[in-house]
Amino acid sequence: MSFPYKLVATDLDGTLLRDDHTVSERTREALAAATAAGAAHIVVTGRAVPWTRHILDDLGYEGLAVCGQGAQVYHAGEHKLLTSLTLDRQLAGLALSKIEAGVGPVALAASRDGLDGEVLVGPGYRVQEGPLPAVFVDDAAEMWSAPLNKIYIQHPELDDDTLARSARQAVGSLVNVVMAGPGVVEILPLGLSKATGLSLAARRLGVKASDALAFGDMPNDIPMFGWARHGVAMANAHDDLKAVAHEVTASNEHDGIAVVLEELLRTSRS
View 1 (cartoon, helix red, strand yellow):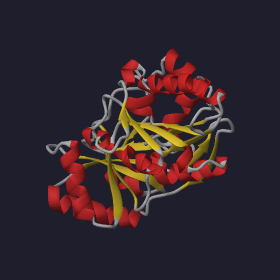
View 2 (view 1 turned 60 degrees about the horizontal axis):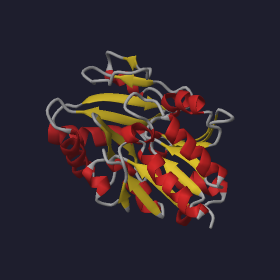
View 3 (view 1 turned 90 degrees about the horizontal axis):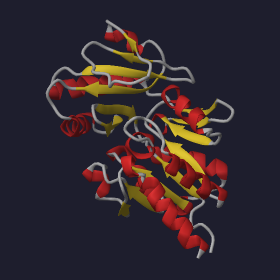
């Protein structure tokens, strides 16, 4: 019996990456064994390319990656952007005014388009500790001066789930709103999701949704689980994702991806 999937799609933060932003040796070996058995590995992350590239390089990853919540398909081996979808800034501004009419002022950050697109951080926006580069700006209007993949919003009082839910209700069908991690609520082009980006990448590889196994931990992974044949949530996953997952594995700290892949590899050899 051969390995049952032709595609293994993994989110990065809280999924493939441990909390120290590294990938364990056990998980690296399990992914290598799955690819040796004929499965393509595709990283599917909310991070835009500039925040993803160093991780892929460290992994020796040379395939396709889906970045920016599906906005970008990136060829890691060639360091080339194959597709990139931008956010209509006029629509985003309108959506933002509707959100603020409901919940009051929000703090903003913005991800610029392109291989070297900077993340601009406005007044009051809390950036997580770590090596990811960001440019701090005093005037939020600066964020709108060049093409963007997405806008990040934070509220001084509302928690992430409440902010995402309120924003979604306020914007109707102007844009997409997703909660992608702690302190990370994003405004995206309407219709964009990890599933749309992953389907584009899979098509380039000649692989179908029925061939795909997906791993994730946050509500922004829900569309990807809806697209793939089998969705696996990490033990540390958000309850909304666990509710739609086919199974729940160990946490990102305890090699949850490797646990599933090793079992599939064992079964496929027997």
